[in-house]
Image 1 (cartoon, one colour):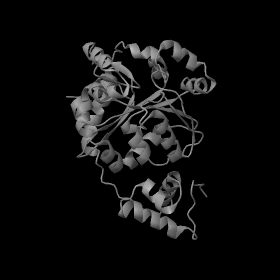
Image 2 (tube, one colour):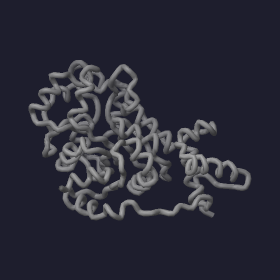
Image 3 (tube, helix red, strand yellow):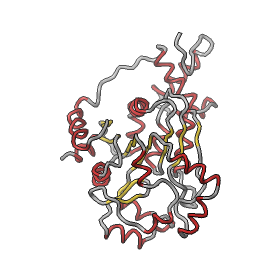
Image 4 (cartoon, rainbow, N blue to C red):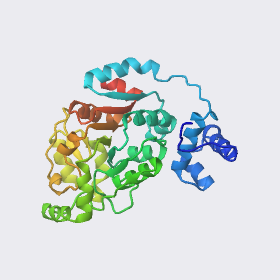
Length: 319
């Protein structure tokens, strides 16, 4: 008999059916069901997977991706991607796309991951939303680690540490936390902090990472952040003057994907561009028209080699 993460038995079948009805019929999220049932979200994910695998739930699929397969083929050829998931959606809002396509995204990422992968995750709301909606992946020995230090003193929920914790709780795996600001006041202070054992321990994991989960942000989104000290107004002006269209992992690049010089790099604690490029599997996740230019730049620069994107934006990348 195959061993499942959760085994359905006569004494728990009613519980499984109730959870399935809440998820499939009542459209409750996995976190909402976990709160109702008083268990972890990862346990709910395991039960839902078991329900499919063990015949409690039967899903009939009308393939929403068939009509976009020519786009995918051209996208892969144009940008030398290893693979892409193009999601047919009437919305370009991350929450809606990730909710409606959570199963497809879980399957796509699960097909990429291998047992023992060390996964680095960046900051950003799309990745935060992903962590709250992705399902359990049946892999062993995974570890999730933030790629960057934290920012904002106002408790922003989508910092890399938060994203790492949420994803690891869903996947029921080990995770680390980088307790350092992303930007410090001087290069000298950065060097001192890099020698701190707990910070150094996390940063050493970067060289071992096999997978990166990366959000991609246009330069305009940083305009709302300079007042929080994340990036100054002068820095933003200089970056734009130097041709930056946006970036990922707080590296800013131009339309060709070339890094734009930025004084803040000397004060930044986290992954370097060279380290990012050394990660074998780099999965970019981005949705929406406003990100078209920066996604195209990330692809031209080979910063990512897998892409999860909505159909409308994907079409604009190959126009």
